[in-house]
Length: 280
Ligand SMILES: O=C(O)CCC(=O)C(=O)O
Image (cartoon, rainbow, N blue to C red; front, top):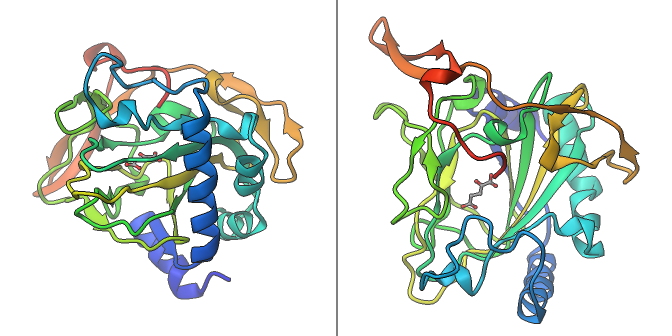
């Protein structure tokens, strides 16, 4: 169960690791399951964000998206009571489940540039929540997650082109030097929870032979009325479907400025900001 200290940490940073929420043995079984599935064939969404003409290691191990729509193991994991209990404690009520993803991140693979999930999910009202479970030990060498503490109350920021030599996605959000994205070190079975405003991403896997596999669920707050089209159908945590509306992209986005010598964010109209893709 989540402690008062962990809740306070989440309130301050916008993210928290539930250490050992799943066992190392469970993580090992998920690795076996998804590696076998990856080897067995192709799935919808495989090559989104990956140039199939390149020699990118991600071409051999593209991430999987929305597996819960066709894989029972993924569906069961997404709705697992342990994830629900943590998110209900962090959010104040049970979330709805909208997405699963499996990142293989083999040695040599690029990372994913810093971004905010709410840019893609467009939850209204409220925000989204990620449950990011490490299947391998994740550290700086194999491109662990990075997150900016305290970014959880920011609005959706305006995006910029990313450096695609180190990121397989092509947009990013800038962060002031005084707000570094800190490495999030995790062991197999640990779950990182973070809300939709938290600026996060990862650098390349520079290890010689270590994968950095992660099983990821995206959820939305229980009071939400709308989410972007790509994330429908929306499921309650008992697996039943709940009809929600569809949100549209656009609207003002934030740019960094300074107030009293501290970084602050000012909202500008979307015409002045770069357009982005419709989903992650
Ligand atoms: O695993 C990563 O490197 C990034 C994952 C991510 O950005 C996400 O789950 O939203």
